[in-house]
Image (cartoon, rainbow, N blue to C red; front, top):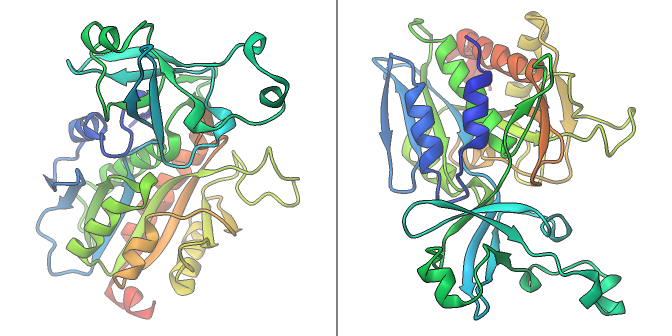
Length: 352
């Protein structure tokens, strides 16, 4: 199956933390036929293969939310102050288009206002802007107009206004929210790959909410499911344009990245070795990384007793408005995920 259109839909979908509804609706439309679907109150979507409850449970996880903003205050002049949802560098925010969800359910175009240099003093010109100084402008001239004409309201979600596109050969993809919509697409593709297969494990996929604000959805899912194994699909920050070739461990075009450690967990070394060996067995290119920063939902499952690994698809410029990723990295992540699901069994899992 060709997944570019699915990736396009997921990348363009508007779903900051806590407002993942549009993403979930798309995933539901692509669900394989041999699963049951359910949701919980934090908007996790559970996709469980039917009739395999007596086998060791393996959970796949990918988070549906993206970084963005939430309206904190509507000002007298019609602009809106906001808070960040997720980790966004302040200097990346101004002078970009955004979409704001209004009270009628319509996405309204806005701009994160950039103060003209004509009105800056010397101190302002020579320092980075602060988020608390920034505002979103939808074109209103007063609070009354912002509310009455444009339908603005407190706590409205705000997303980056970016349209997905590809290179002429379709190999390089550009868009927003590849962290973690590219992981969602890969996870869904794995569930399609194992559709109808008689596995030696019980399989479930969690499309989890609110990862960018503290892995809240995964914490809930991990306590609910208590799996033996967790495989987390991530759109992980690529380092090939910020580090030298010799230092890079997450380069675009060199396959998915399997991390040994980050600030949230030390990956189960036996499961990690098994995953690396499976990749070698099937001729799947992978990268290994030792990370001093970052974290994923895998830690949530590990805290509940699961052996967990992360299959990370490299994304350049994660947590900014625009990102690049490659189709071959996506496809190899799917190949690895499907191979793991096919080869895992009770004896192997017990050895971890």
